[in-house]
Length: 517
Image (cartoon, rainbow, N blue to C red; front, top):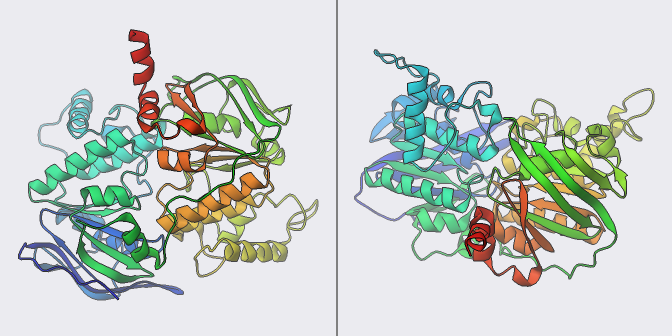
């Protein structure tokens, strides 16, 4: 039964009534009601594909509702574009970035805004954007091209764009997915300052602990319909919210059998590499991963974790040695590394992990087109490819009208399932998983964790790079902490409970303290 909306005399910033949005073969929103008050953080929860982003895309002017009404500050509206929504004080920070990679941070923040009467020089504009970012705890190099930034830094630029435009009603789709704990805390302080001044925030998030720490009220969607409408966040528990989202009890931590590591599968020695800005990103990395073992890599974004994954999977040039089952693969072609048995679950699902313009079928068989039964020396067997794609879509519960649906139309969770289906069914010797549950709902996270543990049990060696310490301590057999391109610590399972110690290593504080001593 749907929980009732709480009554209040507080003026409404947003009132959505009876919203219906249909896509071919799918009802994304089924008569949804949503009220957002002035001066509140309103969390919008639901599984991937539950209709949250669709509902907010309607409010932000990206989609038009098939049925229903929308009012902003008591005035009926029907936005025909995001520009009209922004003019009404509504800004949306999307889960998937909408930045222009070749432009600087400053240019992206100012893009589309009218020129001021008194034009500032480029240096002054960089300084203004940098100061604005600093005030809100969202530090980024204002003069750097976006393509040189880490995923976390790009997310901060997206947030800055909307804050710079003075949005009174800010929609945030998974804004903390790529932020560290300190950055998240700074962001939440900024949101609280915004709501204290009368602004409103709609927060789409799957991090239930964060939701309970910052939200005033919560609305939950399941399969496009409301299951809890505007309930007070106070007194709720993560388990209760998870049950409302997925309709069943969800395990917060999956039990795993003790590790029985086999021979060394991956050996990295003296690995060094530069980032996209030409600065040192890896500074002599040494590590080993054995068969049937999950080695977690902890660290705040931007400390070399992404470059490590790219070097191992052939996407970044490096010096040093990388061997897979004793075979040198450093700086080898990506195809050769794939054929050696390396699977890659990248942090960027759309830019690296998939071809958004291609169909589900093409994405699912992307690693099979050279081998039977899909490919061969003469031709591509379309019927065999479609059969495999249909089976993988069903086995991995990829929710889409058909295997001909373009990958770009999938929700974040379904796109991740697609990538997992392609990578984990390739019989990998080594799996490099980078932020594999970022932006996923609690049910999807549980599924990903089970799949990784299944691969561990099957004897695969796994590198799990994550900024979620709970995820690392729940899945990993050992945790390596990275700081400024080096291994700052090697944490054994008996020390996984020392979260504060791991945090000190992640920020470099432990090394500094020991040096001072």
